Length: 159
Image 1 (spheres, helix red, strand yellow):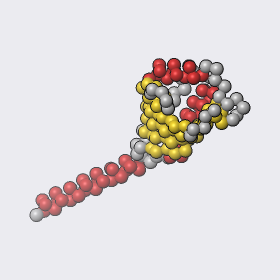
Image 2 (spheres, rainbow, N blue to C red; image 1 turned 30 degrees about the horizontal axis):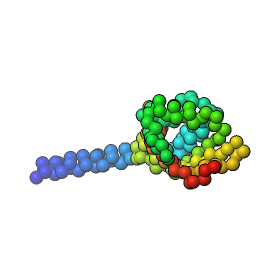
Image 3 (tube, rainbow, N blue to C red; image 1 turned 135 degrees about the vertical axis):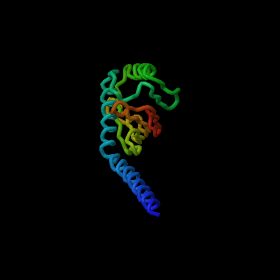
Image 4 (cartoon, rainbow, N blue to C red; image 1 turned 60 degrees about the vertical axis):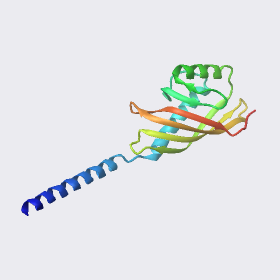
């Protein structure tokens, strides 16, 4: 009888320990959504500034294995294809683009983020020539978010 009581006590203590460990783990993985949104918006701002300046430098926005889905064209797969696309897109370009992060959906561990945003392209007179929405999927790699998949949809406002 005494052995059963001790065994039950040890098992109950072990269960409490397991439950408390799980609770602590959840408490340590609290995600600050405002901070994540701020980080993603900063990546969007840097990308837009680099693009608008006509630069093809590496800004750390895309992962090397990223895939982009634009309308009316095959997917852009990988770093080399992205470079060639940007190179051709920036030739004689006087338009500017801006991005606004509307929402972020973050995984419980904070390692994945889905961003929903709005973009606007204006011509050299600041007249909007294309607007739309986009969705980007980010993964945290080496401590920084990088885009691994994205796609956009125009609202139909095209010059």
